[in-house]
Length: 97
Image 1 (cartoon, helix red, strand yellow):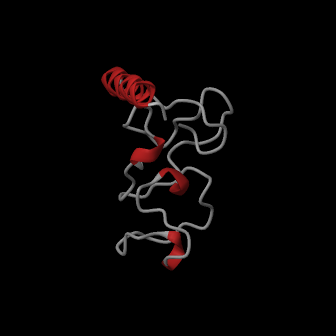
Image 2 (image 1 turned 120 degrees about the vertical axis):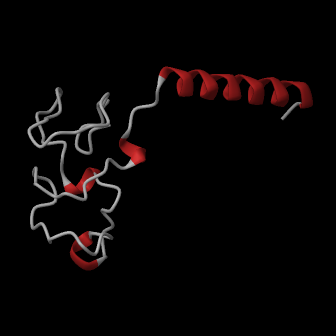
């Protein structure tokens, strides 16, 4: 999902020029990277990466990998999650919680 507006990101391969279809913000940004950790040196856990000043604009970092928390779930993952929710509801109904 987009770091700015929360809309889905379907592709895990994010090129430098890719923008969110909803809000138009850049997607290949530090804020989407798995190495982005505020408070680290230059807010990046990757020690080999060159510091990027604007974490919300597209950059050329070779160490960029999409953080899995921003990835949209696949259809199989959605189905498994829905099944788990239904099972939990059935359990709670059975035991009166």
